[in-house]
Image (cartoon, rainbow, N blue to C red; front, top):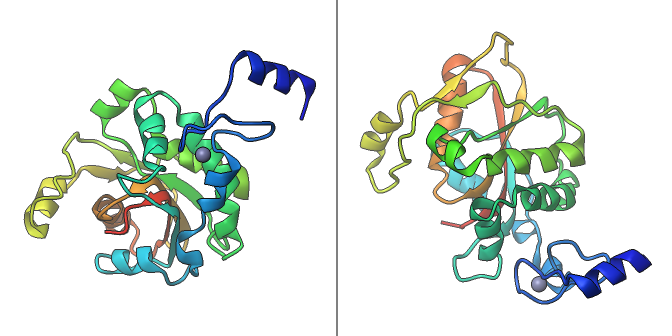
Length: 230
Ligand SMILES: [Zn+2]
């Protein structure tokens, strides 16, 4: 621990974004006790876990994983408040950079050609000024040194995901929300889609649908910081 860090902590204490306890020494964003609670969901395999089984109901996904379960009442809820509403997307990047290697050990990044974040609705992007899923993707790219592409999958409409609608009506409402741009042939390529939180998985499913409409043989993997487990 450097003298300057000790001095800076004395003058301007830093606090754990999950539990609010004062941070010490080399701790960044999260205290060691909260960091210890972060595990890839169930220590599962990248090729078969609860998140994947949820996504398989909608699409064929090769592998996937989330860093932790997200519950509204859990201490990790505050992490997403910070990175979505408190202009702290750097937290998403730092957490992804430090925790994605746990999934790399389980092969999630093996054979991946590029990382693509779930795009944010234009209106939300304008208000927030950043796409938190893209900052997750930046942390993933920092960890696995794979290219990050933000100009292939774009969101062209502001439609909310309207998860309360039945599947048929929702599909109709979401039709054309995501667009796939560029001329690179992605058939045979493996894409790692990233998001900050996955709840129902329907937004990821819409992204996959848009990608597969243009590239039938694109292979998809999924990573998110949090998963609600629904
Ligand atoms: Zn803590």
